[in-house]
Image 1 (cartoon, rainbow, N blue to C red):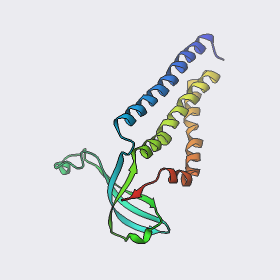
Image 2: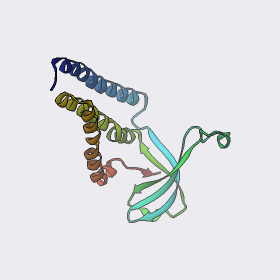
Image 3: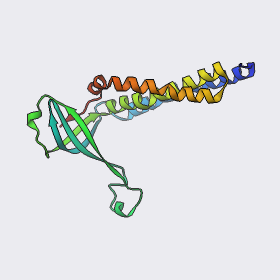
Amino acid sequence: MIIANDYDIFLKYFLFLIPLFLISSYLCIYILEKNKPMNHIIRHSGVVESIEDGCVHIRITQTSACAACKVAGYCNAAESKEKIIDVYCDDVAAYSIGQAVVVTTTGQVAARALLWGFGFPFLLLVVVLFLTWLLTAHEGWAALCALASLIPYYMVLWLMRDKMSQQLAFSIE
Protein backbone atom coordinates (compact mmCIF):
# COMPACT_ATOMS: atom_id res chain seq x y z
CA MET A 1 0.00 0.00 0.00
CA ILE A 2 1.35 3.37 -0.99
CA ILE A 3 1.24 6.20 1.49
CA ALA A 4 0.65 9.73 0.21
CA ASN A 5 4.17 10.67 1.27
CA ASP A 6 5.66 7.82 -0.85
CA TYR A 7 3.62 8.97 -3.82
CA ASP A 8 4.90 12.53 -3.44
CA ILE A 9 8.49 11.27 -3.23
CA PHE A 10 7.94 9.14 -6.32
CA LEU A 11 6.56 12.07 -8.30
CA LYS A 12 9.46 14.29 -7.28
CA TYR A 13 12.05 11.72 -8.39
CA PHE A 14 10.24 10.43 -11.45
CA LEU A 15 9.21 13.80 -12.81
CA PHE A 16 12.71 15.13 -12.21
CA LEU A 17 14.91 12.22 -13.36
CA ILE A 18 13.21 11.23 -16.61
CA PRO A 19 13.16 14.72 -18.17
CA LEU A 20 16.69 15.26 -16.85
CA PHE A 21 17.82 12.04 -18.57
CA LEU A 22 16.10 12.97 -21.83
CA ILE A 23 17.46 16.52 -21.86
CA SER A 24 21.00 15.40 -21.00
CA SER A 25 20.86 12.69 -23.69
CA TYR A 26 19.69 15.21 -26.27
CA LEU A 27 22.40 17.70 -25.25
CA CYS A 28 25.12 15.03 -25.45
CA ILE A 29 24.00 13.96 -28.91
CA TYR A 30 23.73 17.60 -30.03
CA ILE A 31 27.22 18.44 -28.75
CA LEU A 32 28.73 15.34 -30.33
CA GLU A 33 27.07 16.00 -33.66
CA LYS A 34 28.00 19.69 -33.61
CA ASN A 35 31.67 19.01 -32.89
CA LYS A 36 31.99 16.18 -35.39
CA PRO A 37 31.03 16.53 -39.01
CA MET A 38 28.35 14.18 -40.30
CA ASN A 39 30.92 12.47 -42.50
CA HIS A 40 33.09 11.50 -39.50
CA ILE A 41 34.57 8.13 -40.36
CA ILE A 42 35.81 5.52 -37.89
CA ARG A 43 38.64 3.38 -39.30
CA HIS A 44 40.28 0.18 -38.09
CA SER A 45 43.07 -1.73 -39.81
CA GLY A 46 42.53 -5.45 -40.01
CA VAL A 47 43.31 -8.71 -41.76
CA VAL A 48 40.84 -10.87 -43.70
CA GLU A 49 40.25 -13.94 -41.52
CA SER A 50 37.77 -15.86 -43.70
CA ILE A 51 35.34 -15.38 -46.56
CA GLU A 52 31.83 -16.79 -46.85
CA ASP A 53 28.85 -16.17 -49.12
CA GLY A 54 28.65 -12.38 -49.31
CA CYS A 55 30.46 -11.89 -46.00
CA VAL A 56 34.11 -11.11 -45.26
CA HIS A 57 35.25 -11.79 -41.68
CA ILE A 58 37.98 -9.35 -40.68
CA ARG A 59 40.13 -9.60 -37.56
CA ILE A 60 40.94 -6.23 -36.00
CA THR A 61 42.99 -5.44 -32.93
CA GLN A 62 41.20 -2.96 -30.72
CA THR A 63 43.70 -1.22 -28.46
CA SER A 64 43.22 1.13 -25.59
CA ALA A 65 45.29 4.29 -25.48
CA CYS A 66 47.70 2.59 -23.10
CA ALA A 67 48.29 -0.38 -25.40
CA ALA A 68 49.88 1.86 -28.02
CA CYS A 69 52.29 3.31 -25.44
CA LYS A 70 56.00 2.41 -25.65
CA VAL A 71 56.09 1.13 -22.07
CA ALA A 72 52.87 -0.88 -22.37
CA GLY A 73 54.76 -4.15 -21.87
CA TYR A 74 55.84 -3.04 -18.40
CA CYS A 75 52.49 -1.66 -17.31
CA ASN A 76 49.45 -3.56 -16.03
CA ALA A 77 47.00 -1.01 -17.46
CA ALA A 78 47.75 -1.86 -21.11
CA GLU A 79 45.21 -4.00 -22.90
CA SER A 80 44.24 -4.92 -26.41
CA LYS A 81 41.51 -7.15 -27.77
CA GLU A 82 41.12 -8.96 -31.04
CA LYS A 83 37.66 -8.85 -32.59
CA ILE A 84 36.11 -10.33 -35.69
CA ILE A 85 34.07 -7.88 -37.78
CA ASP A 86 31.57 -9.17 -40.36
CA VAL A 87 31.46 -7.01 -43.49
CA TYR A 88 28.72 -7.83 -45.97
CA CYS A 89 29.62 -6.93 -49.54
CA ASP A 90 28.79 -8.00 -53.09
CA ASP A 91 32.36 -8.35 -54.36
CA VAL A 92 33.92 -10.91 -51.99
CA ALA A 93 36.11 -12.25 -54.81
CA ALA A 94 38.23 -9.09 -54.56
CA TYR A 95 39.53 -10.16 -51.13
CA SER A 96 41.76 -13.03 -50.07
CA ILE A 97 42.52 -14.58 -46.70
CA GLY A 98 45.40 -12.77 -44.99
CA GLN A 99 44.94 -9.55 -46.97
CA ALA A 100 45.35 -6.30 -45.01
CA VAL A 101 42.25 -4.09 -45.25
CA VAL A 102 40.77 -1.04 -43.56
CA VAL A 103 37.28 -1.39 -42.07
CA THR A 104 35.20 1.80 -41.86
CA THR A 105 31.91 2.98 -40.43
CA THR A 106 30.40 6.36 -39.63
CA GLY A 107 30.10 8.06 -36.27
CA GLN A 108 26.34 8.07 -36.76
CA VAL A 109 26.29 4.27 -36.91
CA ALA A 110 28.36 4.07 -33.73
CA ALA A 111 26.02 6.50 -31.95
CA ARG A 112 22.99 4.46 -33.05
CA ALA A 113 24.59 1.27 -31.73
CA LEU A 114 25.32 2.91 -28.37
CA LEU A 115 21.78 4.20 -28.13
CA TRP A 116 20.25 0.75 -28.81
CA GLY A 117 22.76 -1.04 -26.61
CA PHE A 118 22.88 1.28 -23.61
CA GLY A 119 20.59 4.34 -23.89
CA PHE A 120 17.20 2.68 -24.37
CA PRO A 121 17.89 -0.10 -21.82
CA PHE A 122 18.82 2.50 -19.21
CA LEU A 123 15.61 4.42 -19.86
CA LEU A 124 13.59 1.18 -19.67
CA LEU A 125 15.31 0.24 -16.42
CA VAL A 126 14.55 3.58 -14.76
CA VAL A 127 10.92 3.70 -15.93
CA VAL A 128 10.16 0.14 -14.80
CA LEU A 129 11.94 0.74 -11.50
CA PHE A 130 9.85 3.77 -10.64
CA LEU A 131 6.56 2.37 -11.92
CA THR A 132 7.00 -0.88 -9.99
CA TRP A 133 7.99 1.04 -6.88
CA LEU A 134 4.88 3.20 -7.28
CA LEU A 135 2.59 0.18 -7.65
CA THR A 136 4.12 -2.10 -4.99
CA ALA A 137 5.97 0.28 -2.62
CA HIS A 138 8.59 -2.45 -2.28
CA GLU A 139 12.10 -1.51 -3.33
CA GLY A 140 13.32 -5.08 -3.70
CA TRP A 141 10.54 -6.05 -6.11
CA ALA A 142 11.02 -2.83 -8.03
CA ALA A 143 14.73 -3.57 -8.50
CA LEU A 144 14.07 -7.17 -9.57
CA CYS A 145 11.35 -6.15 -12.03
CA ALA A 146 13.57 -3.43 -13.48
CA LEU A 147 16.41 -5.89 -14.05
CA ALA A 148 14.00 -8.52 -15.41
CA SER A 149 12.62 -5.99 -17.91
CA LEU A 150 15.99 -5.99 -19.66
CA ILE A 151 15.69 -9.70 -20.54
CA PRO A 152 12.88 -9.26 -23.11
CA TYR A 153 14.50 -6.09 -24.44
CA TYR A 154 17.79 -7.82 -25.23
CA MET A 155 15.92 -10.88 -26.55
CA VAL A 156 14.10 -8.65 -29.03
CA LEU A 157 17.42 -7.09 -30.05
CA TRP A 158 18.84 -10.58 -30.56
CA LEU A 159 15.83 -11.62 -32.66
CA MET A 160 16.23 -8.47 -34.79
CA ARG A 161 20.01 -8.92 -35.20
CA ASP A 162 19.80 -9.58 -38.95
CA LYS A 163 17.78 -6.44 -39.60
CA MET A 164 19.97 -4.38 -37.29
CA SER A 165 23.18 -5.68 -38.88
CA GLN A 166 22.09 -4.00 -42.10
CA GLN A 167 21.61 -0.67 -40.32
CA LEU A 168 24.78 -0.98 -38.23
CA ALA A 169 27.04 -2.00 -41.08
CA PHE A 170 30.78 -1.78 -41.72
CA SER A 171 32.43 -1.39 -45.11
CA ILE A 172 35.88 -2.02 -46.52
CA GLU A 173 37.92 0.86 -47.97
